[in-house]
Each structure stands twice: as C-alpha cells, then as structure tokens.
Length: 316
Length: 316
Image 1 (cartoon, rainbow over the protein chains, first blue to last red):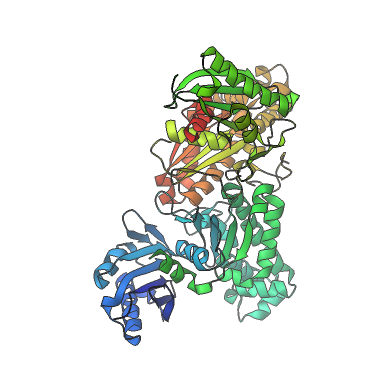
Image 2: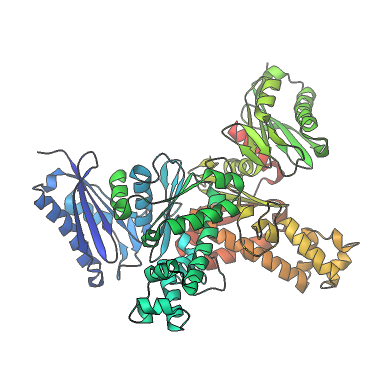
C-alpha cells in the first residue's frame, strides 16, 4: 500500500475544485465539478464526498490510504465550535458541522477554513508570500476578503472572522451592501461594484465603447470595464480610478496598522494584472507612513485557483 | 544585598516618569521630572540617567543591584537596528542608539519601545486587557496611536511601525497633517484636532459658551469642547460628534480586520470617559461585521500614566 494521501477541496458558489496529494503534499490528481449550489447543503456535501471518492477510484486508491481531508469555503467559519455558520454563495448553508460530517464519512481528521484564509496560507507556503512572515492576502472578485499571516502563522482573530476588509466602511453615505451597511469597500471596489458602475455607464449612454462590447448594458462585467479603460474610454477609466482609489486607501490603512512585509492581491479582478498593481503601489508609496510603505511589497498572487487547496494541504 | 531591581522610564515631550521595581516587578519608587526637551537629546539622556540614579540613591540602592533598564518613548523605534529614528515630541532626536547608551551607562541590558506598544503591554499584563489575547490599545491625546497584542504577544510589524492608526486616511480631501498627508485620523479626531475645531467655533462666534470658558479663542482645548458639549452647546456637540464618528468608523474597520477580543482606549481624550465609550460602542455595534462586533469589548484603559512603565517592566 502506498504512503498516506491528503484530499483538499475548494468549494465555491459555481465550482468545486478537488485535489489529491501525496505524503509530501504534492498534488497527484485534480478535478473540477460544477457546484449544485441551488440544491442546498445536503446535495453539495454529497458532491464533495463523491468527488474525493471518484478521484481516489481513478487513481486506484482506497479510503484507508487517506490521512486527512481539508475544505475551504467562502463564509463565516466558527473556529471554536467547528461550524460553518453561513456562506454567502451557497443558499441554505446555515450552521453546518462540515468538519464532523467529513471526518465521520472518511474516518480521518477533517478541517474546514474560510477560503481567503486558506489562500493566504497557500500563497505564503508555496506562492508569492514565501519568505514573508507578516502578510495580508487580499482577494478581489465578486466580494472582497482578506487572510492574515502574522509571525508566520494564520491569524483567525478572536471568533474566526479576522480579515473582513470587504466590510471596511469607506464611504459612510455610499451604496447599500448585502450585509446591511452603507459604503462597505465591496460596494465600491469589488468586481461586482465595477461591473455595476459599467452597466450604469452603458445604460446612460456615458460610454459608447462599453455599449459596443456587450449585447445589452446589463451584460457589462468588470472585465468589459477593464477592457474599455485600456482602450481609452474615459467613463470606464473614471470607474476604475474611483474603485482603485478606495481600494488603495484601504490598503494604506492596513499597511499603517499591520506594517506587513507583503500584501498579495488575488481573485478575479487582479487578472487585469500590472495596471492594478502599479496604481495601488503608487497610492501606498504616496500615502502610507513612510517606514511602513518602504517595508511592504505589493505582489500579485502566484497560485491562481490552486491557492485555496494548496493552503489546505499546508494546514493538514 | 537585596534582590535584583528594574528601572523603567516613560519619556514624553513634557515629562519623564521614572520607576524602580523589585524582582517581582512591583513598583517600589516613582519620580516625575519635567523633560528638558528643547535642550536636545544629549541633555535629555543625561536626565534619564540622573533620574534613575537619584531614585536608587533615595532608596539606598546601588548600580550593581540593577538587572535591566527599559524606556518607552513616542516615535519610530527601529527594532532591527535598535535605533530611535525619530520622536515627534522631542526636537533633535534623530537616529539615537538609546538602548546602547543606557546599556553602557548602567552595564545592564536595556530595552526601548514605542510608547503605545509599551502601554498596550502594560494594559494587557496588569490593566484593562488582562485575560485578552488579541487586543488593540488605542491612545488618543495630542496624536493618535495604537499598540497591538496578537496571540498574547506584542506585535511590532515588519519594520517596527505597526499601529500607526493616527495616519489612517479617513478624509482624503481633509486637513493637512504634520506627516504631510491630508485627512489623517489625527487631523480630525485627536485632542489637538478637537481643540482646534473648538478654537474656530469660539473665534467665529459659533459658540458663546466656548468663548465664555476661556480668556481668548486660542486658549480652547479639547477639555473645553467636552465641557461645553456636556453643558448642551450645539457647536461643541457637533465637533465631538464628527470626531467620534471618524474615530468610531476607524475602530469598526480595525475590528473587522483583526477581530480582537478587546479594544482599549487610553490617552488624555478618554479622560472624558463614559460618553466617549458609549458613543464608540454604539458605532461598533451598528457598523462592524456582526460576529466581530459581538466578540469585542470596548474598554477604558485602567493604568493611566503608569501603563507605559508597567509595560516596560513586563517586557524586561
């Protein structure tokens, strides 16, 4: 019988990414599955179990070879009571004892983490954060979240919700957020927010270019806004400038508070790459406390969609 | 010969507070001296040495009984190179190797810390933060600073400047700060900022009450603004409401990021006490992420002007 194996899963609202790794945490098999999110938690948990079993079968491995299972998932994971309290992208998930369910199913230790925390650990262990001890990993996609590495260790905070930077209040009289507050960073700088601004600009005739990129204004996403801005469209450039200013000043405040040696940017929005990086670096250099600005490197994440599962493997 | 002793000093722009403590870190003697700040670093360092020697002499103790000396001081202390880079309240202090000087003078280990860091350690070791592992200590007086306790340990950040919340940018088009930026938290919510707003209100005739409390508008300080607000003066109440809103939303963002179990408020401005505490608690309860708001206690510092020296004693 082969050495022990690890299974790690990243559960998102649209897809489940599952990997198997050997005793050295090297990935030996991968699989992507569409999440049946609308079917509710019971069905999705069955999917998680099935993807692990299927990968093991394909690799001709048996349950007894499994050493541990790790899952990362968006949402509020209550670390003390080991309960997934809530997941914004998964309807019906409320107080799910996911660790317990998976541990019982596979008869091995199981571990659940917030997805931004797992990605932070992944980037520090294997990616852009290697050789850094104090790291803020920021993920910007539908929402905005962060994972903190302090003195080389994942920092979860006193009740497991550290890193909720998407709900930094940056515009007290700003748009209403899904959380009930007004002017959360997510409402002005997430992919969703950039897309929504782009839709408005297309619908109001402020940007003929944005209109020309889509069949109807409602189809504009952050991607089109980035594209239009790159092509010189003033309305799209203004939308991005505002979003990046809010994001940049938030990073300035985080750099002033935590004096990290690296801030790592991940998530869909950062696929736009260097433009974002250069704008944000400039804002930090110009506005953060000098000694903190000098100490920090702003980098793009290196592991892409594998950050979460690699983080879980590092934690197992 | 008696057990070993510790000396701890808190060096401010106006006074030096010196204590001697026994082997159990119990204070056995105290002394306050006016800082000869304008005379420059050499003179002030001589004062530090003299106050320790004088206290020892009064207590009939000898140099050989000293085990260690600790000093806390406002400013940027470069922890790696053990150099006090800059102190905002002490003219002429630039790159002073204070640890080295004191260690050589007394032939014992010496240690220097930023004053907010020392006070954070003091409050966690002996004051309002006991039994808390993740604590943000915020000091609000002339300026605004913070000391962070993470997993029970003082967190200094990658280059020793963690906790610079006075330079959080909260109003990007706001007043110019001493640091060169615009709209730093200090410029809208420090004792200095509250006093300056009060001076303006008195000078412009917006508050007859504020005018009546002082000989001339320039004499208004934060204390008069608090007093006038308590007496029902609308202009003073508006000034405080704005300052507390900026401070409160900054605490909301810090609570969302760090999910601490306690935020402790110290410094001169908090002498106003319960009013501030109640306002800020309300803002945190209403605007922070629910799980983080529930986990945090907002408390007033318990050690007053002794927080810094007690923190140094805990660190020695």
